[in-house]
Length: 148
Image (cartoon, rainbow, N blue to C red; front, side):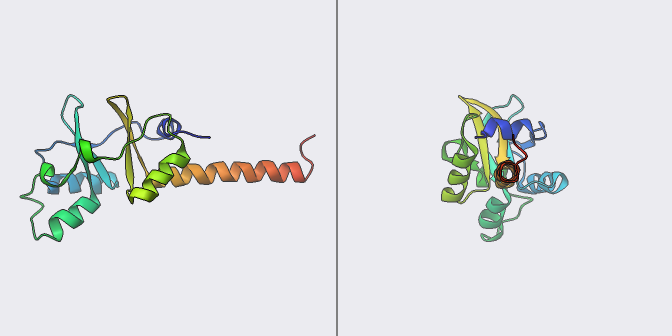
């Protein structure tokens, strides 16, 4: 059974982030440039303050008539104490349960108090499909007599 840590091993190691003082517009520009849907909110020393997603923008800026150029990330981010997180040894299946139950798309991975990476629903689905494909291949080989 794969874990969050194994998903992170196969991902780009670079973590994209903004500070709480950045504007939402700056955060959106970075998300667009990197083709991602969420950013960690951190300071230069790596202290995590929260996470900001495209969904935060849609619900907390656009729908409230605010301007992304005038709104700070700190005003709309999900703060650290409200984030749903997993540990490196959390199974991929448990990550999927969390993502589905809480209706979130990104899950930060923490090893004790240290942030180690961010996995998305796409990462989790890709991992599950890969595992199922491998199982199907092994079963097909077994049924067809390729295993002796």
